[in-house]
Length: 118
Length: 107
Image 1 (cartoon, rainbow over the protein chains, first blue to last red):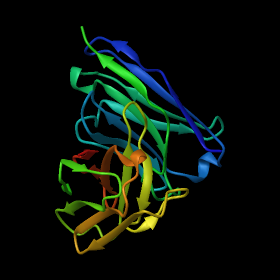
Image 2 (image 1 turned 135 degrees about the horizontal axis):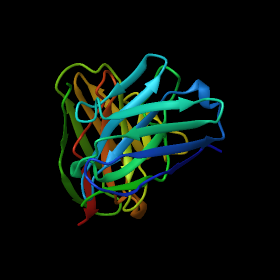
Image 3 (image 1 turned 180 degrees about the horizontal axis):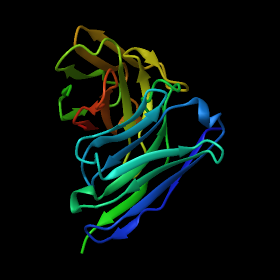
Image 4 (image 1 turned 90 degrees about the vertical axis):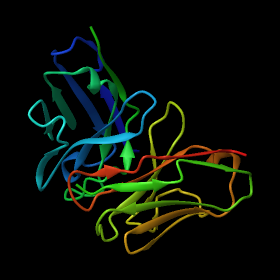
């Protein structure tokens, strides 16, 4: 059974950093693209970043501040978030793609809450 | 960037109704569109991929279709478990973009 378990969320001050992790199991992690999607409180879904055979991709508002990476030996996806802003406050979901070359989310983790506030 | 315009934002319906939700892309996305269902406090769940392919374990009352840049999610006979928020996503090109969501509520 596919399982995705996010961790690393919490309360951080504006300008601070957090590193989110997503532990994957139940599938061959290295064979699939992975994606981060976020949802601000009471708002809709927003694609944040993906990593796959074509490389890494970011939404404009996080490019240069966030870095997506993966450790295939540990079946772990990460999102390093620097220079956090109040508007980055959201639940962050890790999601598995359908193929190494296709990052559309097909299975989602339960999410981890990031709160940026002074 | 490709814009996804989803409508309606809210839909009131009753058990047994047939409902449709629409997403319109600002340019061609071929068939690279998914539909998700999200319930309060839960992660989204994949319903439809590649515009019209049913996700694993998804009831057959859900279906997707496309006509050019207009995509439709249809629920043929609403069940109590279907009252939720629905989102479309285009994955034709980066940045991926979601529709604004449709809240399906009891009439």
